[in-house]
Image 1: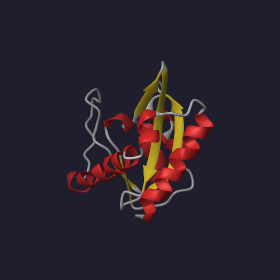
Image 2: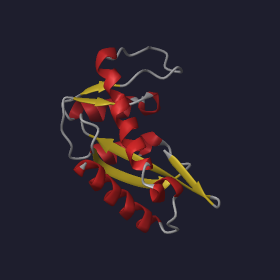
Image 3: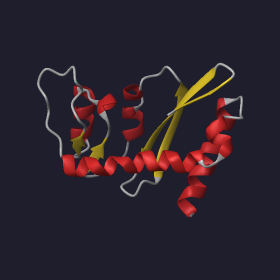
Image 4: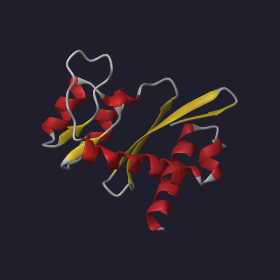
Length: 135
């Protein structure tokens, strides 16, 4: 998810639970790839499965997920020579992270990125996430 304001572009990388509640955030520059932040988001987490989109398709991330004892429910990228199957029924629930992002967008301050300093923006994202969990 990217935000821009006056040439400033940021991206929020988020981990959510099975109910779509935010667990962990990392705010980076907009050009940072999604897959680079995945190991940090998953560090110390546990679960039965990790659902992600094609942007997270890599052998290294799949190995990280396997080391957690979880199943990687990630569709194969189009450029992959050997397609790795995934549980399509479980993948339907990936939209919960998208719905979580949409709930955060209801807070105008996060959608418009009023804060110039990243630490202030990140603090507000944590506050907005807490408020969405309390609803």
